[in-house]
Image (tube, rainbow, N blue to C red; front, side, top):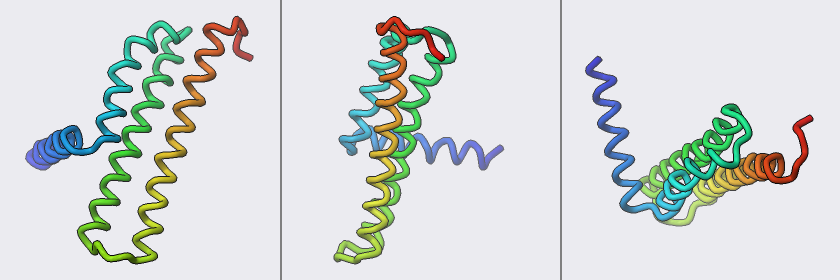
Length: 120
């Protein structure tokens, strides 16, 4: 139980630091705060609502991992290194894929709600 409590406090420390210092994380938290009520009106079911909010949570998750990769790389070396560049670029690509996923999920949900088409 002590390990779980310690992990919780480590997570809260990371959440606080990211919230205070990372612009992308701040923007994604803002997006989540807006999406929670907006998703309620866009969703046609609880399942769709869960997908809408879940997509944004996946985006935030990937952003957290990307920030961790960047921090580890910066701690290792601030000098140019092709392997470090690849690691950072892969993290950025993961964020881009998560953004595309989020836009796709929200786009389909909006089309379903306001486009008048029933899901197949």
